[in-house]
Length: 485
Ligand code: NAP
Image 1 (cartoon, helix red, strand yellow):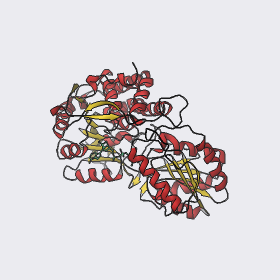
Image 2: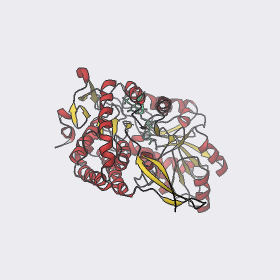
Image 3: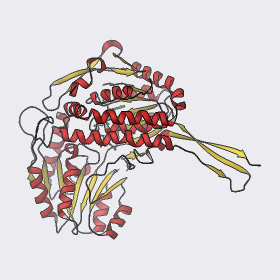
Image 4: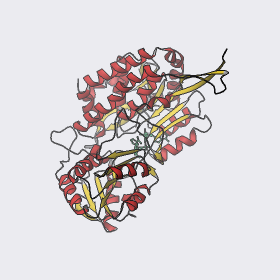
């Protein structure tokens, strides 16, 4: 079995109540290969009515699933972890085909995403409330933890597996049922995952998948339904805001993993080798198409030229190509619109006075490629410093003092990831406290870890995925008062 064959024809469909079925009216949509724009296959296209049927299935399964023993829920996750690990090569090929990333990147995402299955298989059996005596001594206070109930998960195209498992795994561990709407550009990985979870023993109706190009109608319909108790969304801030507004009438619980504008701070006492290495990871993971991607490089005046020279040398040495080919470092971006947006930000930065050190163009030929690019002396006001780039471009700006760079780093509506390179421990502590971001990487470009609470603040959203915090998003608390004797 390999790549596309991991999702046989019959599974390029909706997954409802444990059965694969066509969309009502037989509608289907194309899934494209971003390396050349060709049609890979077609997938059933759920309507709002199909999404309703998926919620029916989730609601029908909820009570039994909540009663299922925590160990049984954990063991299903553990089996899923093992199956994903066994099929990692095929999953990587499938993901690379529909999303464009290299096989090495896809393997990295699969290992990372699969860790959520393992982590939450271990957390399922540690859900607990508390007992205490009230301060006056007369009453005993107990808390009971319960699953939130049926959830809606909406995931983006950039990490087709990991953005799903970060939600699915804690929901399964907590005893929630769910409807998943994957990004319409990358539905195949999620359909493969649904098959794996079924094989791992997940009961029918606990997980339902509705690929759809009518995402607005799907979310509006489901959020208007009082049976839906929670929405967890990963994607753009604009769509996140819309979903928050749509949650008002139903007062659904929410987790919002939204956009970022990560600053990457390099101080003059930093180990420059480590800073360049960290920059390559924080910038080039997933071709720059990551919410955690370093978006603004803020480098101390004394080391900026040297850092920029070394980074440009590394970036210029990367090989562009089809993600499944050997020796390729950088795959295509997701679509033509993405290439246009990145190219526009680069040409505006150059017009604003930035110096182009390498890259700065989209190669001729098919596919949605953009060459790895480094810009130096980018003015703070340039749009590339205020907008999420989502591509392989590193804009560098210099700074004079710590106070100034902290103010500049925090001067964004976003607050997801940030990176600091320094060898000064006191400065590290000051920055960890001063930076208004949900995550701070110190002398590392890689912060994602299933055991850590991933999430943001400000316009990057709220809620945490992974870590001890991750399961809290899927639990309600009932407090019970009992008079003592
Ligand atoms: P997007 O346009 O917001 O799409 C994300 C998902 O939302 C897709 O499944 C999309 O469906 C769906 N969607 C679009 N409009 C909707 C609506 N009205 N109602 C319900 N669902 C709707 O974002 P994207 O361009 O795919 O993803 C990139 C963004 O995600 C970036 O801003 C990135 O920073 C953010 N992101 C954040 C995190 C994090 O953890 N904070 C992680 C990864 C990515 P269709 O595919 O059918 O349009």
